[in-house]
Image (cartoon, rainbow, N blue to C red; front, side, top):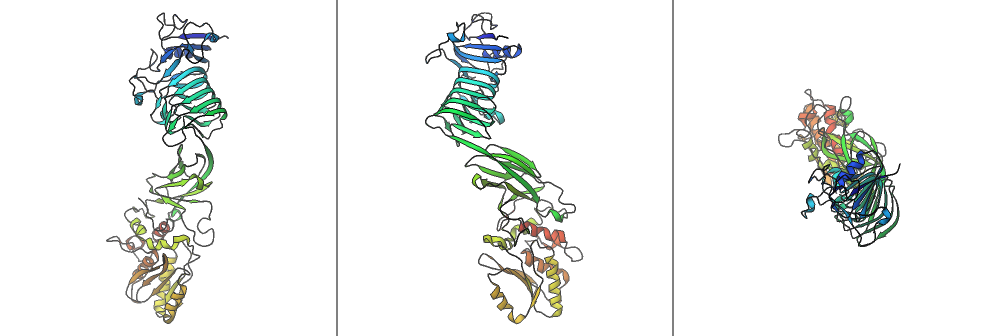
Length: 533
């Protein structure tokens, strides 16, 4: 079936039905609407002049969202004088008739209120056009492709200039369009790319890309997840191109202290992975193709109300805790938003969250968390890249009754520690100091001795040398446990907030899950840093 011709001339004064130059549509929007509606293949011939996408009976005046839409079955052509009988009759040389598609819908010289996108192509063909003054300053898709947003069809022999967008100031390409003989100059992207190719399989040839600007990224061409085939590009001043590669990354979430909760912590960690161009919301395990360009960062964060805002991550270059020798330097990353440069990105991350509710249903922020954040000296067990195979507890000989009480208290606390310890060893009182001196710098240790109730931490050279608990033979069981627990955890009272109120049962025994949880929080957080609620 031969194509029908629909004529457009804004200066025509005939019937306005598009049947001839005399009776041409005066609005390009109305002509395109007729072409889309009639179910035939149409050529749309447009005479010289400037055409705005908000003009015509089928358009909404002053509407930013209006665009000229070309789809399959439409062949849009410009640069007619208004009397041609064939395409070959046109004068296409410089200085000939000029058909301009403009986003300056208000015609007030203010670009901020222009159409978001001048031309949208999902199929068909468009050529011999000037595309100007689009301003994709909206949100979502309305911030891409100020001049043209092309997902299919062929755009050819076109000049794109004076357009703005966050990405793809002149043209945003996705899908599988064809671009041929384009001149792209004088466009500005607030972020990146006069031509922006995203997740596409475009073919593009004979492009002139020059004198475009960008706020932060490449000013010329930008590729992200693109399989575009590009040939014959003439690059002038202020022209750059960047390719954002797709990296396959597996994310494995964990909940700190999960095994302490009956049946596991109920809330599954929701977190967000983002780069400069992509945001991915994730629940649970996931493997994603993440697009990331040179100079960009991979960012991981959470706004899950069941977890603290602090998030941690470990990459796959070291064993997970207790799967290798010693205590690893844990974690690799910690912040409310973890930001990892592309050069450091690996293919697998364990992403960890800290629950906001304790095993007994307590609010972690007001009860346990202050103690965890105050226990900075404990965290120095992990500082400066040190790893510890185990921590030996000693009992300074105070007689058989005291020694038994001390060993029982230490063993009860050892039971809730997240790192390995040896059995308590009785050391003679007269050489305890010598043993301590000999051990300095070699490992961390805990010792218990008789005396007035107390607990404290010996501290030197950037890491703990010894933790010490003291109590006498006549001290009750709960106090003995409390002093030992506080010493080995570096947690005690903070004002009126006592750790003993949360980790002990009414019978003065340790609530093992509640007692273990602060240790897990400490162990899984970066040395010296605070966990944010």
